[in-house]
Structure formats: C-alpha cells, structure tokens
Amino acid sequence: MSAENTKRAAAVYFTLLKDKVIDEYSEHFQTYFEPEVRQTVLLLADQSGTFIIESPKRIQLVVQPTGSVFATNFTHMKEKHKQIETKRHFHLISIVIMSFLASIDRNQAAKIRSQREGISYYTLERQVNDLITNWESILKHKPDFGEEERIDMKEVVSTWKYMEVETEDYGAKKANRRTRIGLIASAMRLLETERLVVILDRDDIPKVIPKQELFERIEYLYHDYDRYELLKQLITTEEDQHAEDSSN
Image (cartoon, rainbow, N blue to C red):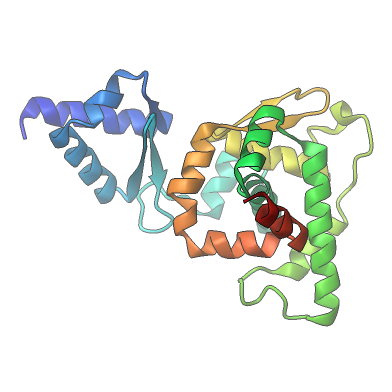
C-alpha cells in the first residue's frame, strides 16, 4: 500500500475513534470503501481490539468487550461517568438500558413508533418496575433465579425497590441519580454520550428517541451476541412476545 493510502486510512480510523460514526455525508465515507483503505482500516481495528459496523449510509466503530486497548473496566467507567456510583447502580443501569433496547427491538412497528414518538422516562420507569416486580415474584418461588444468566436478581430487585419514586416535579429532582427517574436519566445519558439516542424535553417530561445508528448496532452487532438475546428474552414479557407474533 502507498504511503498516501496509509495516511488516508489512518485519517478514517482516527475520525471513527473520535466521532464513533462516519455517515454518508462525510468526506471519509467513500474513502473508507476504497479496497486498500478499507483493508488497512479493518487491520487497525483488529489490532486495537475494535471492529467496524458497515451499513449502507454509515460506518461505526465499536470496542470489543474483551482484549481491546480501549476497553474500560468498572473503575474507569465510574471515573468517566460520575452518575455510576457503585456496581449495584451499574448493574441496574444495565437493566434499564436492556429494557429500553428490548422495547424497541421487537418489530418494525415498535421501531417506527419509537423513532416517531420516543419513549418517555416515565414509561420506561413503569416498564422497568413491572419487570422487576415480576422478578421479585419469581424469586419467592425460585431463589436461584438469575444465577444461570449471571445476574444478581436479589440485589437488582432490592436496589430498585428501595429507590425513591417520583410522582411529579421532575425538574427539581432530575439531578438526583438516587431516584428511579434519576437512574433512568443516567442510563439514557450513557446512550446519548455514544450518540445512539436523542433526548428531548429535558426540563419537562423527558423522552428518548433512538437514532438509526442504534438500530444498526442492534441489527449488525447485538443480534450476533447470545448474551444479548438471552437478556432480551429474560426481559421481554409474554405479552410483548404475543404482540410481536401478531404483528409479524
């Protein structure tokens, strides 16, 4: 490969490191698909523990969960995202995010509706509360529930159950990450930081709108992970599954 093409490939890769996404309007988009440039970018990604998601209108850079020079452990994530105080909160935030993903990753109708209307924090709070209430009921009859999925269900249920519930006056409490809505706001900010969602009406009744980048990540990345499908199945209720079946 020529030095010029190596330079161009490096420009593409480091732009992806900085911006996470390159869309069709970027000068780097067409450059990436030149065979020699693409080969070098993929090599750079592989050597650094990242990989590329290609779709018709954009490319994304994603960090591999293990073996990446850019991977972050809990301590580093806590330093970067101050809203994550403890591992208990980290686990609960993960459940909130997974519940959000499961609600939009059902069928085409759910995708269109979420992009058009968004999902309010209060709707997401009710979804998570219904989920955890169901888990609490299962734990009463099956104390080892969650062990196979490597989720500390008792801790998740306990942490959520004793968090403060907001009924009104969101604006005065939105900064309090120890409340349920505050925790949901923290979870959605993580997705916003990755430029995967847009958050609207922050000071009134906030809602989150998934971007196309998130749906592409679900389609081209998450669906290939058994762990994602396992958690999605765990979180999706029978009612959701029946709704999905009837819409297909």
